[in-house]
Length: 365
Image (cartoon, rainbow, N blue to C red; front, side):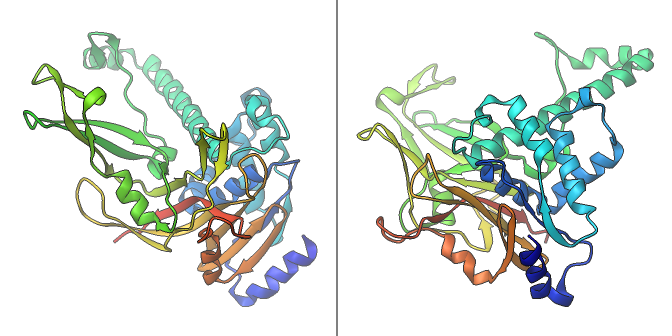
């Protein structure tokens, strides 16, 4: 990326952010799904900073301890510590570890960027939780008297309960949904909470993220064969159900469901629908009914007309500049260019570049 890198440096000139690095990632045969997501995560600044801090506290892990977390931390450290401002880095160690660990990503077939993101975040959570439990176990074994005094509080009818561990991945990405079901006979509301690291939204032609979120939280009536068992009535009853956001995350990741299984065709089809995603998003369908404001900082884009082939690129906002990452290539783009990735207004369009995963950061009031 010599010429392209110098072009980018020239374009930014004196405005090149102090200490920032803009590096393309080498493609190892259809690893664009991985590269595009990694760029979005690198420019998720709170996540990056905590990952670099983790690396500095866990330097030089033995090969036996190598995992996706250490490989990702090593990659981000490599990028952030480069002497040059721009260039290309080969995420070889990370990709090798990913393929070793999960056979889905071993083939050179087209992979799904959202599936990869989901797998990666959950894997990081698992590793951090295991490390936290191991650390807690070591502390408890070194102070047995404390362990005995706390024992009864952690017991339930089913035996010892594991306290939920909140990792820095949770602190960045985890939100809480509440599933409210209201019995139409006795009016009792049953609420069940569940956590999420990203929201997958159904999409419609010529819609917006706001309307997709409203549909996500719309009221659904449960009747006929789908009646709800009401504990108070002790029987199946008609009910109304809706999903609301109880606790909005710091980083809101929205996955647009662009790949839909069409029964008549017996296969998946890509929906090229135009879905407007704003640079500033107000999240109003929360339990508190208070608006939560977010700012868009990254978009993973799927390029192509079908689900089984194509390419992934990413758009990233860094220090008020928008950058376009396409594997090894990095270039500046105008903010207005983001709109070209909303999707096609008509079904048959030559535009095949569509926003697929959106990354929003919560604005602190």
